[in-house]
Length: 265
Image 1 (cartoon, one colour):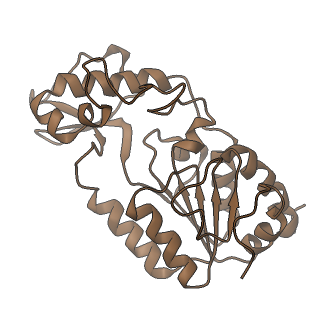
Image 2 (cartoon, helix red, strand yellow):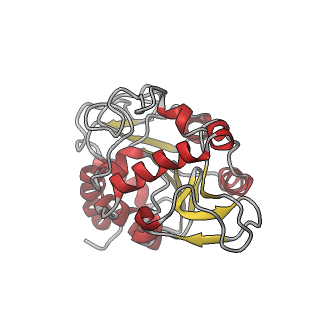
């Protein structure tokens, strides 16, 4: 087993690249830290959309963006969904997304499990993507289930109504307190059952069980586990390598080493 928890984000990239070059099945798990490299603000913290986690109405943003609030006051939930969309408008996939898409083209089998709802993995060219929280640009009618894609919310009348049946439209995302989509869970179960040689957690604080469990399971079955995150998280003590740097920086450096190890350098 390789030495865990290294302080230098680039020190062991050659070892990781060599393992990737011989891997048959790889899982990349991505969170907000990857999209942050596209300029997307986080929800909380300095520079976040909600500095202290509280909305203009004086409630936690998790409450404003909950399924319960959407049922009771859809206009309030839509206000904050639109605020998030406006803050991310004009951003696009970054080098990290590009590298993961290129990895999928090169490896025998790669899967991306993402918490992000921005759709950047698809934009970059990844195909085997599990969007566990949905996609904010996909809108779904709560009445007739009509689905449409909207890239820009600026012209939507909020809360929007379906032109076909008149019922409320919602973004096809998982709001706080809602169930995860069965299709995504089934996809993840199938991927996990087949096993992985490498599991890499990228830019996620790893607070959700479905993010942590694939890492722990892979570790138990002898796979290499890697975390890319500037800060330590719930899984930092358990992974083989903890790389403390921004996602796009590490992935860009890893790609060059991977190409060399894979015989393309």
